[in-house]
Length: 101
Image (cartoon, rainbow, N blue to C red):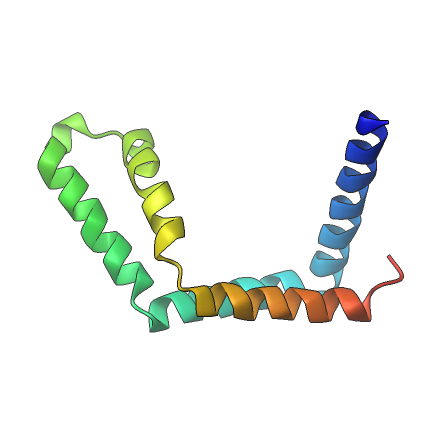
């Protein structure tokens, strides 16, 4: 029964993702997110953090994978709640319009 539920959830996610792509909403959401992150200074904060990590570990000792591992959690934590709430509301509105998935 657990496998069936997981499979159904995966199918639902795939259907929603497909509808997001087909309607162009996925790109609109991505653009909104980019704009909001730049507007709130997230991009600059993360860029500064990257520079700190590179400076601490020295450039020749840092790989891209190391840098990604170092900044991923911090990057997610720095996203303001207001941005998360706005995106979530847009997704809910989209899902309400396309509830027939």
